[in-house]
Image (cartoon, rainbow, N blue to C red):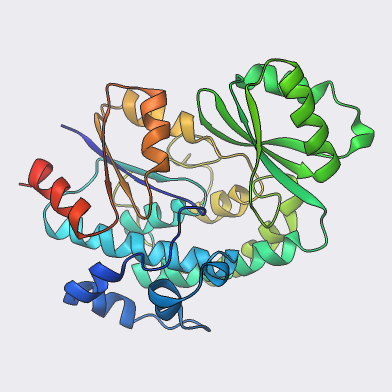
Amino acid sequence: MKIGFIYAGQGSQYVGMGKEFYETSPACRELLDGVSLDFDYKQMMFEGDMTALSQTSHTQPCMVAVAMMATLLLKEKGITPAYTCGLSLGEYSALACANVFTPAQAIEIVRKRGLAMEKAAKGIDSKMCAIIGMDRETLQKTIDALDPALGYVAIANYNCPGQLVVGGEERAVDALSNAALENGARRAIPLNTSGPFHTKLLKAASEELHEYFKHVTFGDMQIPVIFNSTGKELDASVTIAQMLEKQVMSPVYFEDSIRYMIAHGVDTIIEIGPGKVLSGFVRKIDRSIKTYHVEDNATLAKVVEELGE
């Protein structure tokens, strides 16, 4: 058995997430109590309201906090991955799992990332949309055939076969959605996001992170991380900081990342953090892979029972 840990991005958050871990594990309590942000993120996670929790700069540290607690508890039980990756925000949890960041660092860094993304998206009339039932080549051809006067649109996420996400200027995204449906896509679902994430319209956030990472200490990677913007391990010619700067304005190759893990022998994948959206993607990529998810004590106990030493 070869295990991969995968970490979710924004969208799966809910009030009360991580509360069980915090209340029942002294190590988790110590972890979160050691991190102070410029807002009471524990209160927001455990008892806040969904609207505030869903604000990008709030969601990101709260999601990573849950992921860090779950990772700590899995490692305590001797369950460790051969490879790890995360979707968008989840990449930071994967890097912390690999000891590039401490858990506290990861939570603090993604607060900064969330603020930078909100700022960069302000004033852009943007939209993101999931395109269901179309392959990537056909969707790219559909984009290429659009009138450039409609504005900018690009593929932002390659999630799994038959599920792609596009982002860009609203008029262009709407036009593409209609064209995709005419060209055979089954559905076009507008997403509730606060900006055109993972497109070049987020360049300002990338530049802000570039400056910020000059003052961040990166540890040595202990576990191979598969990166969003390439779907592969780190190339020796680039730094992790460069990958993270690029990531916010580049497409997320999640399907490619999972295929890379599988090609390197991973047969069991544990999705860590709220929800199990990524497990659904994995099943569409390769049904033979065993998937689990860990978001509370019950799901943790199931994984430990089946996979623990």
